[in-house]
Image 1: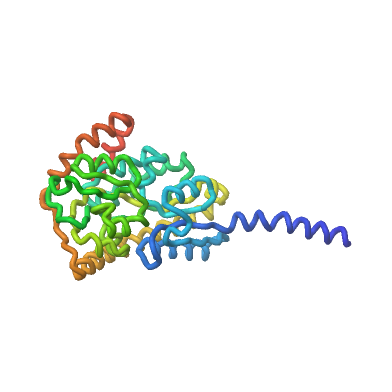
Image 2: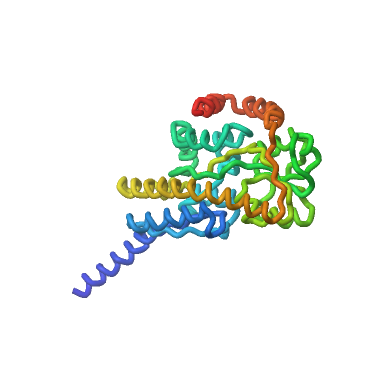
Length: 322
């Protein structure tokens, strides 16, 4: 009897760590609590925890590391899921660089239609092969330039400006074609760099410009809409493959539900953020002639296709999704 009891204890000791490892997932998010993406991720976590045996926890505010580091952590299953912008994904998964081409989408609706359809499947397949399973595509609005010097109304106004960009050679090339000086930099370093004059400006969407306080030190926001880059809610392939089909279905459903919430909240937040920065004194101007900016991007596309001739079909698929 005593031997039987000991065997039972031993069996439990062996099983418990396995069960715990399979059930507990940690997730990464760069945005602060209360941000549309963060609210949507909290919803995702709550729904998964309520409908499956998984126990998810998400860490907001980039406390688990920078975005490039977090992408690698999810790929290596050091983290189980994360919500990432596709800009920093390009150096890791080259196919996704297509999404970072300037003016690749004609508008946010075009991006949604493409990513929710066959185009999104193309990128999902490329990412799954590299350790990431995209479950849903989040909105990140359109990105525009802001700086501390002057309004931007034409490419000539960009000349000489030191502008922070995400860590991707495409963005460096984009700014160079406009005559500016691109500085790849971690997002968390931008405010102080603007304040001290290390850089003159950056490029991002309204909510990021507002929530970080960048509008306090860079009071000119010029609507160029040069980048419309989706974000993804991704799960580590290693974590995903441990799930049974029913759990996968539940997790994917929760992800898609969270994307619906995020897009609605995002549209509301964009309006609120613009109103807030304008009330604080930021000068916001609509760039009326975006064609002048688009024409400057021809060398960016030429260089990209020369290096990635096989991705021309993906660009064509995006254009066909309008």
